Length: 477
Image 1 (cartoon, rainbow, N blue to C red):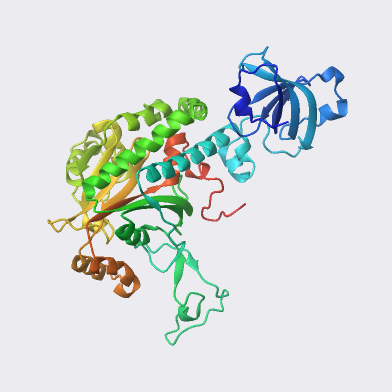
Image 2: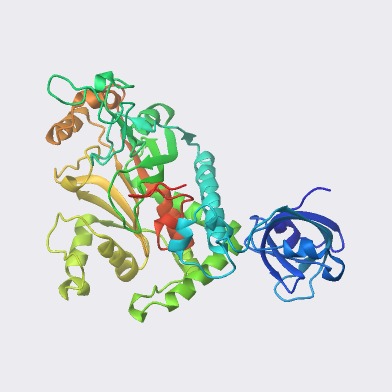
């Protein structure tokens, strides 16, 4: 008999049909009622065992976490909370689970404890919902770009360039520790290394994606990126995924249009296709908020936040205008901001971004035209010589969600900026070539996928929206 998923059965109206399911026991009550889950949905299906005629030895093996195969009849449920249940005719234990050793028992566990058991935490309701939503968002990302005529490009994971200029990169080498050959200056001689030069794990696929946009027109990358930043905050990972579209002939306005359209599309996709998981996570977040002091509670629930982004036009505001708003704001005047806003040119913090979105404009915000000295070298310099054609998309509860820019397409200006920042031209000769041969206006942005999942699920720690988090002092699993 063909095996059905629990999701299919819960949506079925074919009562009294013979069915076959496999899954993991969530709970077993009264020696009779199995709550079974197979990962296809957050909802369990109740399987009713005829315990009076069942083998007692078999019943003792039906423990939380055990894998089972069940044949039975789909029937209208007599209990509350579900419309159908399975009247079990045959039950087989596929894999036992010792209740004295299995860590994921049917009770509330702390997220810290579950991170220590990341290989099993996806068997809980919260993490199964988060990971199904992550999968749906990933699918929606590809669907959007493919629908819009973009080409998917796989940019290198091992690279010789530092796209961000931050320098916090993981080195890639096949030299043995403490045995690396030295050159005449006493420095490591990377010419003898595997790639013949110093290489690292990538922090961004943007620069390589730009070169492909200048031939294919519209491209996007969606892959792993790495930052060797010794940060233990709830918003940082050492390994995470980035979505980076690049479009030839797009200026900053078109780039802002693309980012808004893209974000609304993927969020609408999960609102349409992940209702059970979102309803569960919305309820979970509401319970969490109740535990906080009134002043720290969010004004919006999870579903409200998602609809807030999907239903509102994003407000476009220049950095200069935003600084004036922040300088004259009550929190700034009353010294409520942790980082006071006193002058033009400061880098905005999350508290400032959230104020603009949640308090002042009450809609998602796109800030543009930032000071050149706080942005990357590849962003197009404006005619004022002080600002660049950069943009950040700001969300409620999270601050910056997207960072992007119109890229500097003028060879001489790009060379001047690289020289000012001591970026050697020989390292990026290939990047400069795209400004020598058929240069044109082009733009793109980067969106940290885990930030998007964090926002969509209402989770508070970025380590809880990636299957196996990589953070300082932690590479378990």
